[in-house]
Image (cartoon, rainbow, N blue to C red):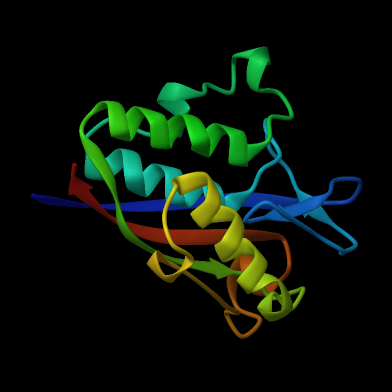
Length: 158
């Protein structure tokens, strides 16, 4: 049995924060603002996994009103989501994700992002796709005000 989920996340870019995507710290003049490390890519992936199993979203598991998650490493949060999915009888079939950002260029970091995500998810890197695109200077991402990410997760019954 298969189940498919879609995830979406968005965060504002601000000075004084690290830019972390897919568990990779990327050198940049701004970083993403959020209660945790604001890893927009990992957040979208977690929401896709949870959505596939009708388990809500990351705000349900890790509310931004809970100080335990202030500054949290999103890769550790994703490990918990993977555990919950397995507890509910599912593993990852594959994940396809896209980061929307005008800058910086993400291509040099994508292989490491994929490896990080695969390691936490307990799957082969071939099951994890990460892509990046711009919006040609349109909208809030094109104006470098923030970043967003979409993800689709295929979950497979164990």
